[in-house]
Structure formats: C-alpha cells, structure tokens
Length: 431
Length: 165
View 1 (tube, rainbow over the protein chains, first blue to last red):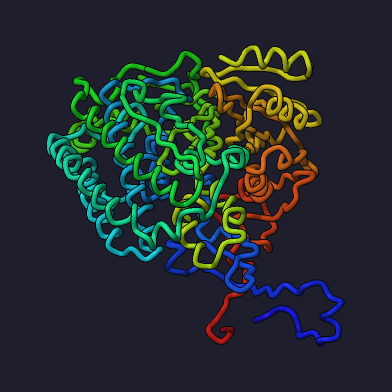
View 2: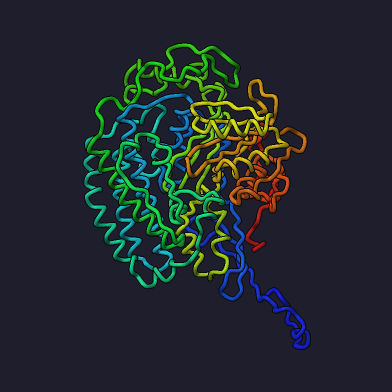
C-alpha cells in the first residue's frame, strides 16, 4: 500500500517531490532467503530505497551452551553453525582449544585436517554458487553443483560415518584415522571436480542473463570492505588480498603451493568468480596433501602434551580439586572403549569432572579461514574442562550487516543476487 | 610479539595501558575512559585498520576477578598481519563504553550483539537495538546470572492462534 495520502494538485506545486515509498516484508519464510531471515524493504517502485534486516529467528544460544559443554562435546554444536561446511567449523574450534592448551597435533593429523577443511570449502562454495545460479534463474547450474556435493557427503560418510553433522575432530587429533577407502574416494572426487567446474563455468560465465543480473550489482569498495570488517571471498572480491591460510598460517598450510584468488570489481559477479577460482585452488591443496600424507599416528599419545602453564587442579561446580591420574588429552578410540576395560577406564579418566585435563586460566583468540570468511573463536579457560566463555566470530553475521549498504539503489530482483553472493547461513548468523 | 614497536610507542602515549602476552598474542588492558583514544591511535597511527571482533566476557564467577565485564576488541593490521587484543573492564550498575562505530562501520552489529547478550551500553552508537533477541525481551542471556535452563521465556509471549490470522 502507498504510505502517502493523495495530495491535491494545488499543493503539489509548492511541495517537495513526494517519494512514493512502499514498505514490503521479505521473509522470514521465503524460497530465496534459503534459511530463516527477514528483511523489511522500503521500495520506490521497484527500486530499493532502504532495507532493514531483522534476524534472530534461528537463535539457539550456542555460546551459552559452550559454557556448559566440555571442550570435546562442544564440537557437535559447531557442526550446527555453518551446516554447509561443518568440518571447517570442527577444525576451527579444536584449533582454538589446542592453542589455549598449548598442544601441537601430529603432522598426519594436520594434513588430514587440511584435507577436510578444503573439502568443506569446495562443498560450501558449490552450494553458494549453485544457489546463486538457482536464484538468478540458472537451474541446471544448481544440479551440476549439487551432484558434486552429493559425492562430497559420501566422502564425509566414509571418513567419519556421518554425512551432515560430522564432529570429526577431537582435542589432539581426530575421531579416527582416514581409511584407504576414503582416500580412494577423495582421489576419485578430485579427478571429476575440474570437469564439474568447467561445466559450471561454461553455463554461467558468459551467460547473458546471469552476467546481466550480477555485474555491477552490490558493489563493495576495498576501503569499505576493510572498514566494515569483511573477510574471506567477499573481501577478496573487493581487492583485499587477505587470506588467513597465507597471512597467519595455521595447521601446515605453509607447506602447500596455492594462490590467493582476488578480484577488484567487488560486485556479485566478482564474488562468483573468486569462489569459483578458490575451488580450483582447494583441489590443488587437497591433491598435494593426499599424495604426501605423512605416516605415523594421527592422534597424540598418552603423555601430557599440554603447555607448561596448564594447572594441576580442576575447577568445576563441585569445587576445586587436584587432578588425579595421568593427564592425557586425547580420547581413546571408540572400539577400545567399548571392548576393553583399559579403554573404558581411560575414557572415564578423561570425562569425569575430577579427572582428565584442565585448561589454563587464560584467554585466546584463534581465527581460521573458513569458506565464508574469518571464523574466529575467543575462548576463556578457567581451569576447568569447560570453556568459561566460547565466543564465535561468525562471518555471516558480519557480512549480513553490510547488506543494506549493498542493496540501496538496486531493484527488488537484485536482492536475491546479493543475498546469494554473500552466502548468509542463518544458523551461523543467529547461532 | 612482532608488533613490539607499536606497543612501546602506545605505552609512552598512554601510561595506564598494561601489556601481557599469551601464546604469542599481544593483549592490552586499557582503562574505559581512554579505550576510544587507544583504539583510534591504533587504527590511525599503527595501521590496525581491521576490526575482527568485539565481544564481552562476564567475569561474575571467575576466580580472583575484580571487575564484572571485560570488553574485548580484536584488531588486525591488514598490511603486516599483526593482531592485537584490547581489553577494558566495566562494572555494574549501568555498564557503558564509548562506541567505535565512528572508527569502524563493522562495529555496528557487533556492539548491538554485546548490548543484546550482556546489556552493556555503547555511548554514541547510532542504532543500539537488540539484534538477535526480540525487542520485548528484558534480560541479557549471556550474563552468568542468567540460567541455562528453567522456566522459559516462551511463557512471556502470547500464543498466536489461527483465529488471530
């Protein structure tokens, strides 16, 4: 409905031009939002004058839960943040916990974590680009992307038994070693991916409709990208040559040969191109990692591998007690827990409130290059087995804040192109 | 710490700043009244142009904690890739810090989230509304005195029936 009442012709001569502004509700349940988020739009005809994001529909108190679940249990919650690439969240969480404890994992574990993080990146970008094509009318493109994602889920199943909520990492290692079958599946997947990328690029790169709807739409300049805390592919599409894998190398990313993909235009099409190029770089990284997989154990052993500043006491709601027993950090393999008394005892020694290991009374911020951007965890340890505070710095939250800035002056139909290019995952946005 | 020079120069300008380090991360503790000036100096003179995160910790049940709330600003230098963590402490009643939206536009929603979850006011924020929780909500759930479980908030809301539609 128009907001302004009709004005008589005589007054119009003296009046300022009347903006013919409509208010329109977009979401929270709308096919193009993909998840649950809401926008209140002010429209002048088809042009968006302003947009007011209204979020929080999926707020589930993940950070509050982080103060009540122990460092190993909380990994199941990180799966549910960005459920498009859960393994990247698993890696980010346990890297932060291990930094707090002062643990360095084995070379084999590092390589496997790189492989799963890069597989997640491919999976995430495939979804983003597939959905972006779908929203702008390219349905076939979406099918190509999702065919590859289906294979990706099969690999996750071979790695850890779960397709969607993987929870594959543990403190000091992984749930289990990578199996020869999973390695073969990843090799097969890597062989097919370049053809998938070629097909996807052939469908969209010179597609008149897609290019017309994304080029010059939602432009973000380099200065604005930095000032508005943008990271990941969105910042790189605006010319910020920043990639935490290169800039603050974690795991063993420093050993791999790959390029940081950037563009300068900063529009939706540039974000599409950057994501497409990043997937090819990820294939390169996985290829190097899987062919040079270091031998040796994947998990740390029985010894206390924590940093020297870790306490010998444990704080819990039952009081402060000195820690008893050997202070290993890695959970025993599940088959040992279920079939041997030693494994069961070791398991209980770790999970009981007055046993196991304690984190130092310190605070640490660790960021990783998640598919969507900088995924950081700020963990406060209080001498217990549970984080005192488990803050997650979600890239989607920061990126959705720039949405009104990107959409002003564009048309209603551009909203889906901009939303698609930002890759807003509402579960991560609201946590 | 690779950003030692920047920290030394900052300490001569602001003698009240204390510096500590943990696992190679430099951290500054700044009095609340000079936090805006310190962040401005770090941004404009030391190249820390990227605000990675703003968050808060409620130290209500923390061992030997003197202050209630600790604000945390994570800054990054996009040229040298240095990180620095700036912390400041605020207390009840009416905890408040100056807003940094004037320095970084990206602080807008991050500060709104801290207000939403911890009830800390950001003086000078252009639009300090709740961001994740509904406007009718009265408590700040990430405070330590807010329970994880209990008689839930849903009782405070009117149930919408089909007849209302």
